[in-house]
Length: 409
Length: 108
Image 1 (tube, helix red, strand yellow):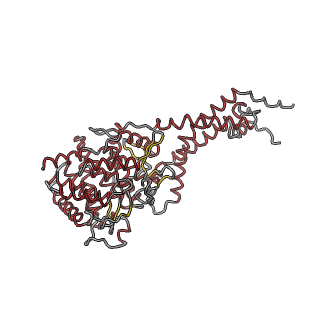
Image 2: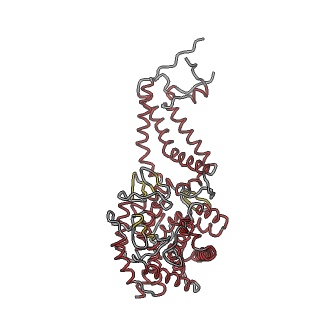
Image 3: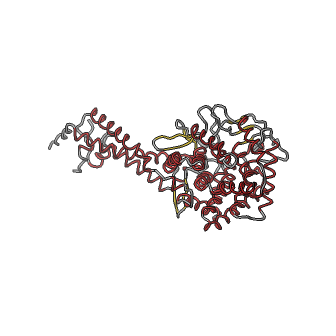
């Protein structure tokens, strides 16, 4: 006859009540022990991700994946197709963040700068070609065609500002003569279109201005000061005064995320916008930028049991779950878009405590996958990984701009 | 009255809230997760950030794969250790309390 399991394993001969009570008690005790221990398994040292100097191992592995992608067209095409199926903007923003990250990486590790320059040039040249051949709508969401732009001929600050950032970052890493006039032209367009606006901001979509795009454009203007000796100081001070008085949410003190050309608020403060906005503003007014980060951390940042994440909207503002926020996990209100950009904010403002918790969440729920020394997060996409990479490497580029601006004065 | 299970049926038929029942559930979750992982469904987790897992306009099946992988990942990390620890603790509780009565002897 075949033997059955020992009675102690099946609780044979034990009354149902005792079996259920002992099982329930055992599971509750096991959960009480295990759940608090889980974050320890996924803890990542912030120094492995971001460091004041050099290229930390995690950043190097993340960068490797992007460098492979831009040197192997089949990988790039597959990844871009996945993103463009949902949002063409991600394709464009992924390029910007990657160029910024590679420029910072080149400044941190000059021995690898040549490979980075090669990829930066490929990205910038291809982006300019696509814009030239397919028009600006190629990188915009379909609703960009739903009504006419206020500015005629139509221009999107989303493209002009970030293309200026890419060109400027390349030149800051290593000068390229033929990029000088291209950069100067974008900076001129950005400066003129923003100055024309009633609230000193330009539209990215028809009668729709985005704080993300306008603060990125301000950073590009500051790049122009460092590179070519331009002077936008007077414009910066007018812009800051206008933003404080007309583009700030009263409940939180945070800059709103989108508004009409005349300054009517469309969307309140938004996590997928404010962390990048604060980073861009570091080049314009460090104290104001730090105050915006501190408020964003308080209003949007959340931690629990060693995990950290960011909400898309503050509690005081009810906004939609949109393409920028990504899917939002209910109850905890975890937003992929906001949490990804929170890496950039926490790193840029030296918030190691929050950064450590964000990293724990990333390792737990970001589904990392390493192959051949290249790291990617399966729960993310190319633009998400590029933001996380830029968060790890940011610093030297912004320092160089500040030093260049000081020298120019 | 149902006949008493013997052999593998007795192992697999252990009640849920028994040490063996908990261990079997833990093993089942781990096995399903291992299969999903082996089939490369980790890549489909990109759905969490709103990206398309396939690049196609419709991701119905892919979304199901993605959600299954994500669900079993969390069950694997959170549920399996709790079930395994719980099995050990329950066995300890049963051993500490009054011993289970021995099964009735088989009649010749």
